Image 1 (cartoon, one colour):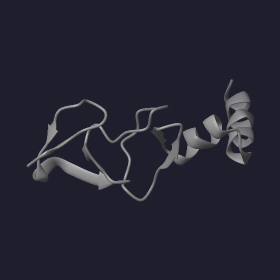
Image 2 (tube, helix red, strand yellow; image 1 turned 90 degrees about the vertical axis):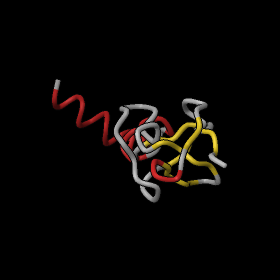
Image 3 (cartoon, helix red, strand yellow; image 1 turned 30 degrees about the horizontal axis):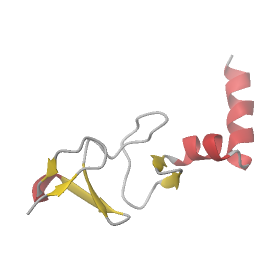
Amino acid sequence: MPGLCPRCSKAVYFAEEIKTKGEVFHKLCFNCSGCKKLLEPGNFSENDGNIYCRTCYGWVSGGAGALRTIIIRSLII
């Protein structure tokens, strides 16, 4: 019996699933809520029910990563 992907609400079959935090995702649906980068099961963070890459999580959570990202973005612009 396939599970339902929390991102697209469609059935997830064994060959295309990524299991994490008690849920199953399609490989292409398991991406960062900020930058849409594809994620690995052990390499993500969660905030308010959304999943993020490490860079975007720092930005969203307002931690030290956010300050580093602001500095880098200001240097690029």
